[in-house]
Image (cartoon, rainbow, N blue to C red):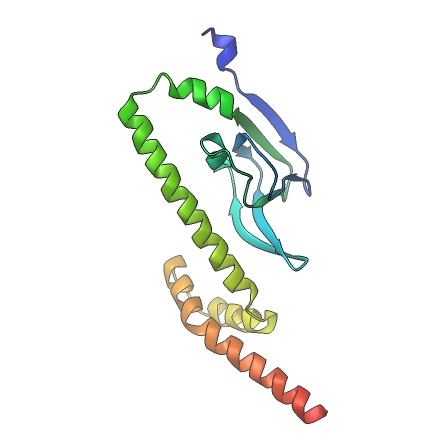
Length: 178
């Protein structure tokens, strides 16, 4: 294979562009060189952010090994530059790799798919939290100096009861104003 065949395509994605849509066939992965991309899903017309991806992140990598529609949609939040890896190019490169490494990679892809499902479930749960509960929890978190791990644990502990309280207050207001 000559050197020019190993050069990967680079693309610029403008801010606000949805360049991968859930449910579409995709045979490419993208390495983010600069910029910021969100992965999201839509439920009942609502956009639910699953994750943010910055420089060095690879998105769509499952499509290199699995012939299935992409699960999430991806949108550039700011002007973004990506390098594109096609399934065909990836498969060619795999033929040069030891079979044990390919087996490890296949196993890793299965774990990655499972991880993606967990992240989607977390995003759905987060979307069910009332905006007022989120704002209250965020104001409490800002008043404390906590590590990222402590913030995540604190959110897990306080968001559900705050959410239940906000919903109960709203229900009480509806019942008493009727």
